[in-house]
Length: 247
Image (cartoon, rainbow, N blue to C red):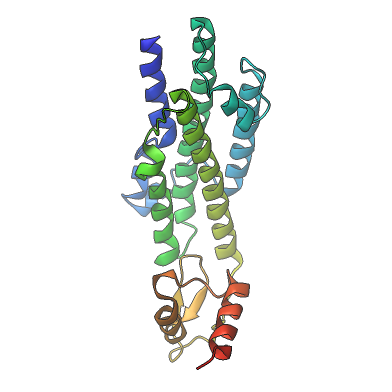
């Protein structure tokens, strides 16, 4: 049983981070190598869907026949007394964590491919920064609580990371799609046309704001300044609030 536990910890570590995998190293070399990625953003959606189907099948095959991730986690809260059941539950977790590990590798490949489709500067730089978030200690650590069986904590963190990967894949796919169709000619704040006097400042989301307006917005919002187009409702509310606030 001890050997099983060590093996599963190894699987958890890989599924929680997969470190700096080979596909991501390609992004740090040359632009030509970006084209070696195996998946396109459009294909990633299918990869995610296939992984979700597989994970649901694995959950259904668990000892208690769980049908969702939540139900699967529920079956892992208490350590079984029978060695056979312990082995069976470790097997389900290992398959699940391997699927998440593979999903992480696919995400890195599609991210490497997406970089070539994005404009140089903030949009392109935002992709590796996004992927690096997966390697944060809160995602790669094994948070063992005394309240439940440690396999529960490992599986819960793996589920959380799976959700994060899905969100990142959607973020990258949407960004590439936006870059492909975006033809922005004027500033969304002052409505002046971009040109020699109204210089655009491109944001990580691919939208642009003139440098003067962006500098003013940053002076108001600080490091939490967001895109006026991506969060248009919030932006309008903030501007209205500034003009209606008592002086």
